Image 1 (cartoon, rainbow, N blue to C red):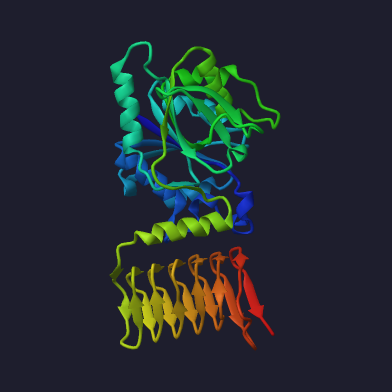
Image 2 (image 1 turned 60 degrees about the horizontal axis):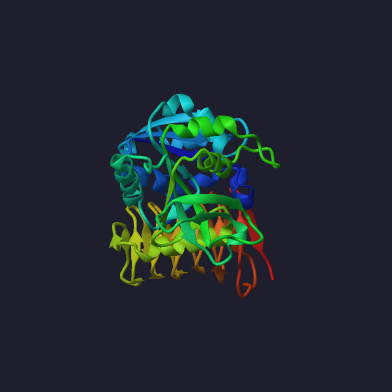
Length: 362
């Protein structure tokens, strides 16, 4: 079985961060979102992975390389324009061949691994017969299914209809963005026409399979699922991942500092005269001095935080925060400088792109 990860999107909902960086490389707990998907595939036994890449292909290639750091082989498949998920399958045909494959949205984050999802599909295929599935989709119960693609399913696990953002949903089961296919999907993506928005929709391709009498199974997600395409969901995802952090201190923490709860201080980091209350992570070669780092905060590599207070925030590599009180619910890009020159404001909520400089005045 092969893997196909879709990482060609422009990330417009995360601008200005994504003006200069791929959205799939924005870190959750100091690890790029894309890496979580690659690692999930590897744990499920998938070692041959294709990655759909768009305008940020050079940056993604530089970060992922040939895949050997993850124990996989990576093939890059360029997509010149975002023409839909089914279009990704269409252009990946040479890589996929006649193999079964998992398709995974590169900005998705799941608590559940892929092992069970893949094993269930393999078992159903092995059982054979008329009910052997050609596809399997992952679904999640949601509060307002009108915002999603929604599946209508039977009691024995087969999908009978997919509806995109219905006014009257047939269920509360939304498509998560993880799919399993056998080679029949290639017939489907060639048979469908572009939707009203000019894209080849994977929901239309799966519906085509259903209308051809092909069995499509579903599994219901265990645990949380977050689309990290916006700031607040990304911060929430960071919180959830930090909740299960295994604490460790590989850097230097002086005697005047306090470390409380689940905290990771990475190698080369220095904590001086500061209080860090987890869950939190301090990146490699970062410096935290005379500061308070509160829960659900990720400080990137080579960052400097001096005389400041922050919580529930993500700060990317190389940024400097000085004399800021109090920073909360914020996403700070790479190589950003934020400092207060005079009287400090009560609280700040910021979303800053790479290489920004912000001076706060009273």
